[in-house]
Image (tube, helix red, strand yellow):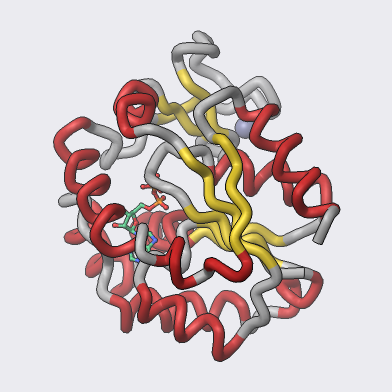
Length: 205
Ligand code: ADP
Ligand code: ZN
């Protein structure tokens, strides 16, 4: 089974993707994480992507789609993928339909004022990628692996406003594109609430 998580920045896609991966044995494919890996390694894709990410804009479709195709051609994706942050445009969704069967799309619904509140508090484990928020977790090291937490360069209010505008304009239309496969989860509560409701919906499919 392949599923897509659709939602604004800070709707909880990354956290839910990790929880679903643990529960169902999916592989998490996050284009944001793939770009950040490329930036860290200094690849051509990374150098190009950074220019867009730092401004809160989307990386061009051609680059994103090519990187995604390479990732899902690997054998670990055969057992089911949870797509986190892809597709983000209609073009990406059309291309994905050509190469993978998408069984369900989970829309994580969160009002923008909650998104803004979550933005400044997000912290990420530098080793295992676990996601925390300073509102509920005050330590500076990961509860799972003990490694230091960091804040993403693009997690600031200036970039966030661009990211929200881009989401409304480019990504929100996918809610209609996937109307036949869409389930909606309330992402405004805590991560466990979203996880339980997503599990229930997926088991019904
Ligand atoms: P968010 O918390 O905003 O959902 P991500 O980690 O998914 O963050 O993505 C970070 C940035 O990487 C985005 O703001 C965008 O610039 C770029 N990016 C990620 N996925 C895509 C995609 N599918 N298409 C274009 N750009 C993307
Ligand atoms: Zn960790």
